[in-house]
Length: 401
Ligand code: PMT
Image (cartoon, rainbow, N blue to C red; front, side):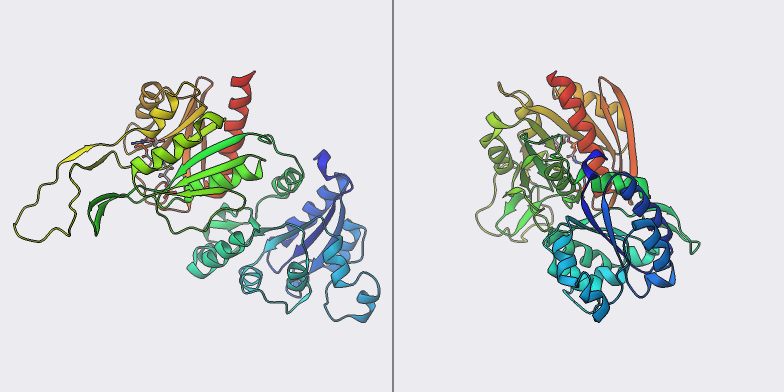
């Protein structure tokens, strides 16, 4: 929290019951030495009073775009330029949608368009609103524009529902804000991360693949960038925007993914294999589309190279982290893979459940190495990725010292 001293934080509060937590967030930022200016939307003022936020921030609260008195003080463009960071907590589905659409119909949205400061949002809403594909698309759009989404947490909600949509706690948010001013514990480190599935051709129009969406690997890449690393993301075919600040190398097959990983292995400090690489490929890929001529079709499959094991066996091997996607005896099989592939650590991932693992927004894993087992999640993949990158960085540092 040291890094918050003298930093200028613009705290935007939108309408939601979680607004009460923003009072504590404001207090914690002030205690850590930050200068805080608060912007309340009209809906936010129904949940928390300007007077409360004025008392906690020690500054007049900003509420209206077209207010001659406020503009004569710190005008909205001046406020946008003043901020080192813009944090919107709680961020309602409405503000997320308006920011994704590039609207500027109130003070907060206008500030977000006008500022050059990094913007982070801590969503808080009903679990069904959070899961709604429109909200998810809007969040993906904001992330592709370089904004950061923190959370939401999972649990009981004020409306009586349970699920994702709780705003992260004030202490966690204050730490996340402080961390954005850190140079990052992985500053100067080069990390290669594999993500997504591979596609193994059968003929020019068909392939063998799996259900990996790439979300876990892409979230890890973003978290590694945020921790200061130089990240190469070697990705199989997925429908995700490139994470901010990564060097993205797209590939299709396991062979192509291996070549992309080996290209930079000499300079790589940490290798994280989150991709679901097809273990087998078709021995003879047909040059033309295979015709339906018989009732049965037999394909001969041959083993693909093991990318992770190959990198781990390299003479200049980086610190190697694997995933183990298992449907039974999860940690036992993961430990076997840790040994067999010669890894520094492995992340056991139970993929037998529909709401975690493959193609889901959340995940729950157990990190296994010589230090023992560390269970993380269930949590949104972005949140889990930050925890994993932190744990990997710590073990990498221990290994190097
Ligand atoms: O992409 P998502 O939808 O977000 O889902 C995330 C995930 C479930 C794919 C991810 O969290 C995960 O578990 N990835 C590993 C999937 C896998 O293929 O696991 P495995 O147990 O079969 O392989 C063990 C390790 O060896 C993995 O690190 C894998 O990347 C690597 N491997 C496997 C085979 C191969 N030929 N080359 C490899 O590098």
